[in-house]
Length: 356
Image (cartoon, rainbow, N blue to C red; front, side, top):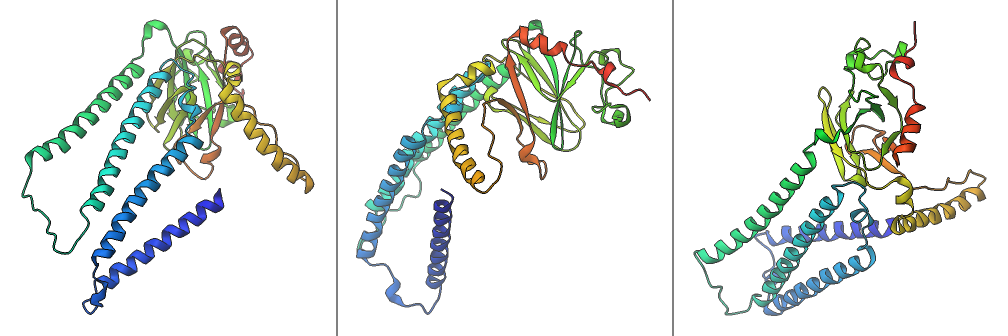
């Protein structure tokens, strides 16, 4: 696949250079007059436009047939996920229809009105009706999509405090994530990067004098109870990061010096998602590829690759530095009983400090 992409890129560069040379040649004042297009040249170019239109449609059909299955658009794991997927599908459909019609008209008119000897172009100073049509239709379509997206976003960002959401802080730094749970009081203690003290293991800069911070729990793995609203408070220690949880259709920037927030309710546990047929097939395909590579590695006397197992992930969706690609945290969605058992095993902040 990489080789094919390389060939296509080189071919594109070659065609671009050839076109630039032709343009340069046509701009020369002493150029050969035989380079002026004839009716035959125009006819050939007209048919080539139709051929290219057919090529575009053919590639589109092949792409849908081979890669039209988009498991990430059908396997959301949050309450608001299906609404995001619906908005995405509608947007893609509108773009596809507009692109199909526009490309047809563009190439068809290039063929129909190709240059012919003795034919003169009809000049329109203006056409109010045509201008109204090509202005109002995009305005209505875009306004509809924008309003739909705005209402969807407002619904997602409207946090209902009456549902008593679980408060969790996501703390970003180059190049890892930390999670801080609010404890039994469900209130996060005060924190500031200036209070970070590695000597006593205060790695997130919690205010040790704040009683709300005493029962906070800091972890390197994110556990979430299924069906429970989660309110994420996000901080960054150094540069701009972006907390991205693709299966939950959630993303929010983590900005140094301020707290941002995002809320969602997970609806599918990790174990349930692993049993999803589409996810299962994807994992099987990945492991098949890994097995083939492992055999080659073992033949060289090297260690084989580990088997892949599906997990929800928290990723950084901003290019935040050289190890950005590896900035991720595993998310485990489980039933409330398992979540509570896990939470009991974690140390409270007041018990994690090193006494000097």
